[in-house]
Image (cartoon, rainbow, N blue to C red; front, side, top):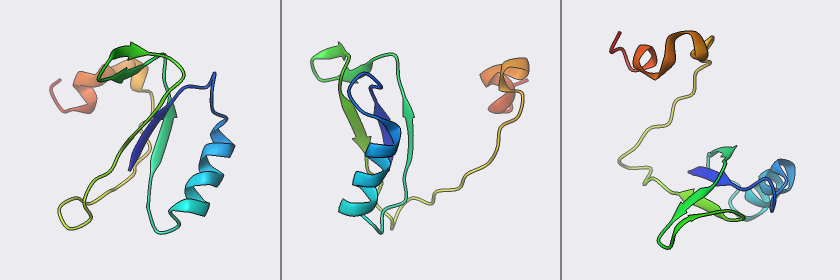
Length: 79
């Protein structure tokens, strides 16, 4: 699951604790946003979760160092 949340409404540790309690088997990554894109447009004070079916997706994490130096094009292998 990917979770995007508003820091004005949720504390990261509270959200992590709720995820562990409600969905202990679900692997997730989360980050705060400057606004959430919802069906009603850009809003603040929301949490958006995207769930991926385990039979079709594999999640892998990695450390991206110096992302500001290379930008998203370098990360995607376009440079």
